[in-house]
Amino acid sequence: MRRLFPVTDVTDETAAAGGPAGREWSLAELAAAYAYPEPGPEGPTSWLRGNMVSTLDGAAQHEGRSQPISCPADMRIFGVLRALADVVVVGAETVRREGYRPARARAEFAAAREAAGQGPAPAIAVVSASLDLDFSLPLFTSPLVPTLVLTGAAADPQRRAAAEKAGARVVVAGEGAGVDPGRAVRSLAELGHTRLLTEGGPRLLGRLIAADVLDELCLTVAPMVTAGDAQRIAGGPSVTLPRRMTLSSVLEEDGFLFTRYRRA
Image 1 (tube, rainbow, N blue to C red):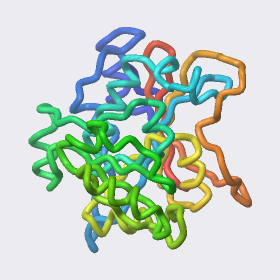
Image 2: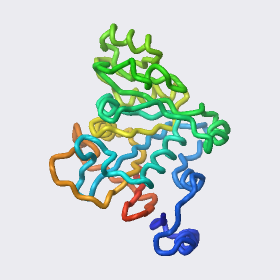
Image 3: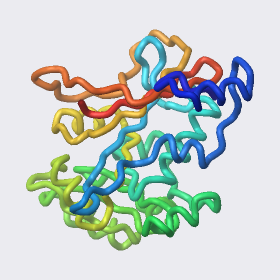
């Protein structure tokens, strides 16, 4: 892996150590490269980061799943981003399509998470208006930390009860049936979750963008083309004006670009 941006003396040394292709970065190096912002004088504030992958022609999935357009380095970064987060926010459709399981504890990050006051693994927070979820899955029945279900006040009471019976914690984050993105971020912060990570899907990411609560986007650009009618990384409502983001870093391995943008 090589750092392409920003260019520093360390960038040059890293590239030279492994030749033109660089070398495989350690998990500690990746964790440092993707660290969340340090808390300010008034304490920690919420920071919502998105992590998505896209082909050169804009596809976020192939045949409904993101795995075919990923790679080993992308999965290493995926794991590091999870290990740094307090909570992973994900849409219900992505849970169904990708077969989500509970986040696992990783020995390599145990000391760092303990020092940061985090649990052994991030919680998974599933955003769902209908609560049309299979609550018998391990994601709900056997996580290391209880799975959260974000829904609206008008959600079906029987489905809410089924979620709670399975062991999930239901968090009301909207006045109607759906979830208000801003309220979801505030509700998670009230539970002590300020280092937020969303892995999509595209509809959820689009809603977060439209609500202007996305602080950072980590986008893997895969050197692939798929054509077809696959979703982009973000869908749903459009913003009034395109929002500018600032490039923070670019890493490269095997033709894949690992970009990181922050709100301008």
